[in-house]
Length: 155
Image (cartoon, rainbow, N blue to C red):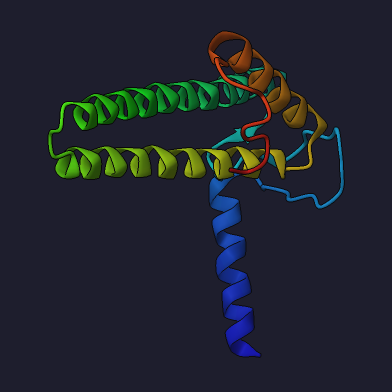
């Protein structure tokens, strides 16, 4: 019991030192009071920081489509290089391995990025959810060279 009290006192001290609280909601809400996005330092404290945060979420969500487009271009280039090497009779083993490693790196970046956006969405805040959707739409409009059905889930 004493150990639990010590932990509680310690966490209370941390909360007072940071001068704000981050509230996690598990239900849909439009409330922005004590809203933190993913990190304690990404705290919405007023209308100005809310607008900046929402613009940041739009930019992050749009950026995901940019990463997907760069990945598609890389894959197309690697596939074209491998096809030209195979028709010329050249051994493509090392080029194929390098291409596969590059594709794997891009895939890992996409998975990380998509889960980060999922964490933003899981604030269950309506404003943040709309910002994610607007950013995804904007990113697809700018960089969406392929079908929208390729990946609309976490990854």
